[in-house]
Length: 362
Ligand SMILES: *Cc1c(COP(=O)(O)O)cnc(C)c1O
Image (cartoon, rainbow, N blue to C red; front, side):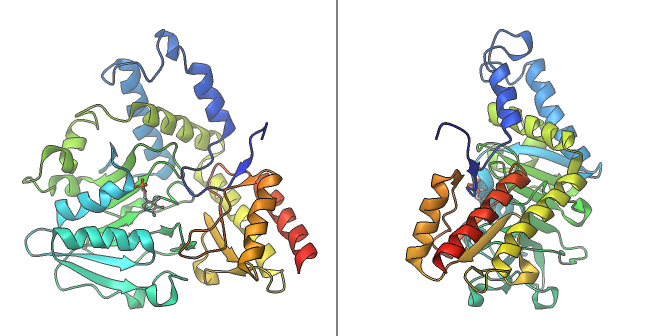
């Protein structure tokens, strides 16, 4: 390829060309320091401006209430699978999990190693073709929290409304749909996301945490595993993933320049509708994995009549600049990941390709 392609990879994922160009422009000399942003001190005023700016912008874009902090923590989203139970499964309480996919199950399995747990609902029986209905969720007697995965990256399902948990802290893995639509953050005690899907490159998890949850951090834990270490030190207790945080900041500025979450959400709905319509109007040639009411706006999963045709689809698509369409082995087939950075034109080109391919092969 001599030009950039439409990149449908699930993560690390496509980034807007504009922010890559911006980073390129500043790469050798960041704002007159004579150094790359990779080379400056994480305690410099330039970096402080980046990290504070990233927190402020995320708060503004997601309308995060004042009693929440935004933290940047290493170890990706998977590290949060460990930190959450270690910090909050205390005093005989049980970590409650809704299992709607592989990542949800991984989170649950980590909690099992730490302490008391409870499966509040699971859709494993139907190979995670939908999320759980509110009336299926049965919490344990003394829940430490309820954990959900708002978008199931591998299966292509997404929660449309979130469970009401009253006083029980609702914790969400939003790795693959954070910042993709308007979200009422006040429903959640803690939200986390690996950066490499909708926020920037890999290297950090973004954690949006309510103040009482910071106070509740388990003080018996080693320093790097407690949330209050990150909160008290503005995520600068040790050297953070500074370049990643810089890129996140650029990404947030880009979302703002697009018109914020309202505009981005509309565009995401439009993009997803294009591809789902192509599936639904294919006379059964393309078969969606997710039940319609649970369809994800971010990851679209579908099968073709045979595995041979699926292989051919992926190879032919790559030749015309549609990359990264191979589905995860747990679903098979095709997965089109269409995060914020995927333009409408990418989905239009995919749909055109789908229609052509079907008319040749059906
Ligand atoms: C990608 C993903 C993860 C894993 O993220 P890492 O940053 O690689 O640890 C966890 N949960 C969900 C929902 C994901 O999509």
